Length: 173
Ligand SMILES: NC(=O)c1ccc[n+]([C@@H]2O[C@H](COP(=O)([O-])OP(=O)(O)OC[C@H]3O[C@@H](n4cnc5c(N)ncnc54)[C@H](OP(=O)(O)O)[C@@H]3O)[C@@H](O)[C@H]2O)c1
Image 1 (cartoon, rainbow, N blue to C red):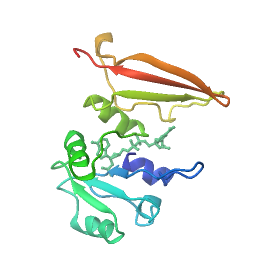
Image 2 (image 1 turned 180 degrees about the vertical axis):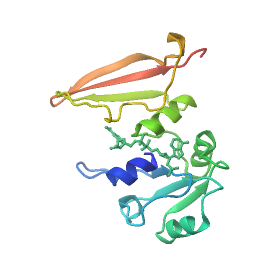
Image 3 (image 1 turned 90 degrees about the vertical axis):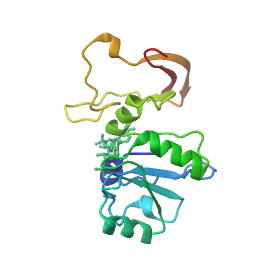
């Protein structure tokens, strides 16, 4: 799953291309079904589900369905992520899902406590700037208590990149 803004900006494929393997089910939440008609995720390379709210304009929904992609409704005005997870489990047999950003979706999923593990890929260079996306967007906390803590599961090198894998430790759980 990636957020609709990542599709609008990066036009991701979300397919397995550089190694052998089956492409995953691609899931895109977009409250208003606002996915460009020529987006790569609407193509035939893999199965796709676009999750919309009940407020999505019917013409947008119809346009997405015409491209052969499933549209599921979860939530009234916004995409209700816990409800979407229930639908994906019930109708698509999804038990595990990888979320690959962007920051807005990452934060929504963490805020709903829907993330169990985080995998970070640390690249050997520095890049930044005020408008560079970070791991989570929209997280406003007042106290240290509200920080989401992590516990390291494992780390390893992959070429010149360091990969770290973390369990998410939510408060009170
Ligand atoms: N470095 C990386 O690994 C990486 C990975 C992915 C993305 N990115 C970067 O991240 C940037 C995009 O991130 P972003 O934070 O702007 O957007 P995003 O997280 O990709 O997408 C957010 C959008 O998803 C839709 N959405 C629907 N329901 C939602 C919900 N319940 N919670 C959150 N989002 C929901 C909304 O669009 P609607 O208005 O259509 O509902 C929302 O604006 C791009 O620059 C991309 O290149 C980087």
